[in-house]
Image (cartoon, rainbow, N blue to C red):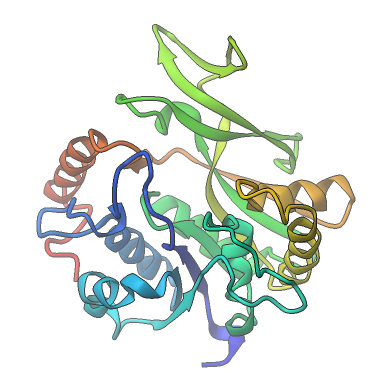
Length: 302
């Protein structure tokens, strides 16, 4: 299949869920033991994605194939790329004592040698809803360019957890829905009829209809040039900072602030589900059971 006919999805699956307490990517949440990833892949296939690139760690690759990808391997091209803290990147010296991953920007960058077409990026442990995949597939086919990328923005009130704080990148956009900035807000929670986030020892209100990033991005493949130059500089400046991470929003901010590219915000009203905390699993399981009963998804999925 030529690159012009490929609609590619990159799934970031290399992370361990620190707050969740384990490898949540492999947890059963669907009526027939489906994982959250299964639902994302089902929706992506329905939207026309036909090339899947999983960013993963080699130590659980076999378990991941057995639990997840073997069931739909016949439905799309599938690739696995190892992300390690010292995964070689062109011209970037990563030989440090670091154990913490370099972040989502680095995770995407490790796939640069197998992607020659526009592509989308998602987290492995988030349920995004079908509308987001339909919007993104259309964007990649009709609107993406070397200077125009995209992001699916979810409505903040649809992304909160009842079981603890969440962190979200709150998107600011102009009248044309072009991203102007992303502000990372931490310890977001609902308090009464308001949504608050904490900064330092103070709490601030944020509108509950704000579009937020759930790490669902759409890129022209030229983004790899920006990722590589940006990460090279970042790694050099953070050799001794074992906690510094190169996040995708850093790249977006750089492009927007330096007039090197723009990001159109496609707002989705779908309900986001995720398992940030162990207690979230019961809520996700119940929600997916209801969607299955309503006929939104077959059972089993594949």
